Length: 538
Figure 1 (spheres, helix red, strand yellow):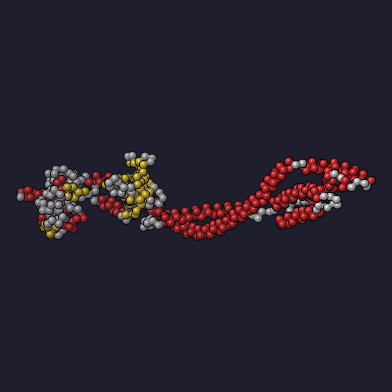
Figure 2 (cartoon, helix red, strand yellow):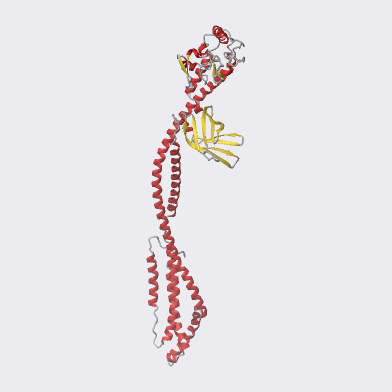
């Protein structure tokens, strides 16, 4: 009882010396925001275990196990004492530190029993806190300005990208139609070129056959007397036969029946030689008809058809065959006539070869049905249009993916899309890519997936990445990224408060909210108003 009596006297003396801003005895050690809880006549312990009367508040006897009834004394071990620290930042102490002879509160309110005289150092100590708070306010003010600018830029970027997306979709339709048209035309060209190449290959095939037959014929002629030898022999015998014919004409006594087979052959050969010579000259003159006055080859015009060229040469060959039919000379037997016909056939085959060559040369000069320049232009346009279409489709996909995300109340986080921020701690490099992923890298090759983008949380003040790589015998990794006000966007800290659950801090102007700035300004104003007047000690 004596202790209680002296305690009451001490409290009364303190009340007389405290300023008007000090709390009443009953509210000693109670935070201002909790005062209304203790104004009732009957008060309930915070843990709900029991109730106590207002008279039992701070009576230095612990009625609640949680110390609810003794916030201003050391009676309850679990009790908390609130230091107001006017001019500085308020704080809370364990009730066991009350009246222990040590000044724990800068205003000395924890040592009110008078055993120790505590100097009020809150204003001096609070100067550092106020200066720090002022710097924080200045940063917020600048950050809010930057944020407003970035919000406007984000809005403009969103509008621009939406307009670009609309234009690209219209362009995609146009390009898709153009590419399909060019594709059809390109396929037509390729089909025509293939057909033309096939025709060319078919035209070249007779030349190969002709060369083969020529080689085979030359091999056969090597085993017989060559045509040149036959012609030379005939020319020699022609002179001799003329002399013999003269003799026969003079005496008229020699007849064909008296001639030997050799002489008859020579006579027939001389006659065929004369006719053949005329045919060669005629054929030669016909061949020369395709030459100009200057000896150049007359090329058929584009309007000439293959049929006309072929008919011209075919007519020449037919006329030669008709005019060169075997003459049935009186007195010549079948063997002699067959010999002359064989020589004539050899001449006709040679002329046929010449005609075939001339025909092929004439055909090769016909104009191509395809214009190479036009074909190349179609291919080039198709290639370029296809590339433009592919580029437009990729851009459409990228913009669509970007615009589908929740980008904040004002779309302010649009500027973070496509960016990554990293920091190094110990041997690890942590990389955060908003709207994509979060990873932990160790060295150049080892990479651990901390999570993939899921959503914003806590009113856009935190980002959540989940469903990362699984832990050994544990959950899949995840990371929450807290947004803090900063003048530039950077990853400042990463921690693992619990197994496989990470916590990071990303400072950014987007975290500088105008509401928070007003709160800080109000707090500073309050501290400046609570400057002690006249004295700084109890």
